[in-house]
Length: 220
Image (cartoon, rainbow, N blue to C red; front, top):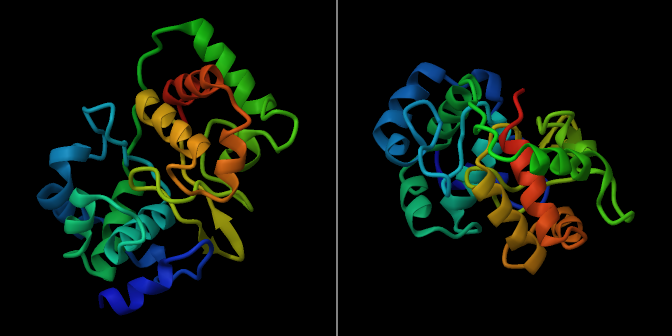
């Protein structure tokens, strides 16, 4: 177990190296408490709005991001150091644990902004792309399609192939500040993300803020 097989999970689209149904969520909970809870919360709900929530996240996505941090293809001083000591089996266990936790949406602060964000999510990508919902689902949930977030959204990132289609991250209940920051990074090119770079650049800064507010306040 370790870096050799983890390397299979890197790149734009890859084969699943381990079946996620076999992950042990009980063991994943133990790893989460010892290695992840100080930043991501005891059940994957981060108290810091600049750190992503992991509760309810796609297990394939969590696994792929750990693989990316492990290999160095995704850069983060903190996460790279943590992932370097997580085995392939441990990553699958963590992914299973977080996928079973219930995400908690952010409270609505501006209903007008949320309504504008809903319109962006379903209808507006500059007329050149499918809507956000085409890949991310009716409420920001993970879908199976050709779109992918790219170089990582916290513990989300490289597209994972499951049944021949790329998994995309669950976005409902993710912190608005974090989502807006990542969309801005995609738009500027600071974060590589194939499809997402092309989509984010079609959105104005106001659009990105609005769609982030909508997703943050959405329930599964």
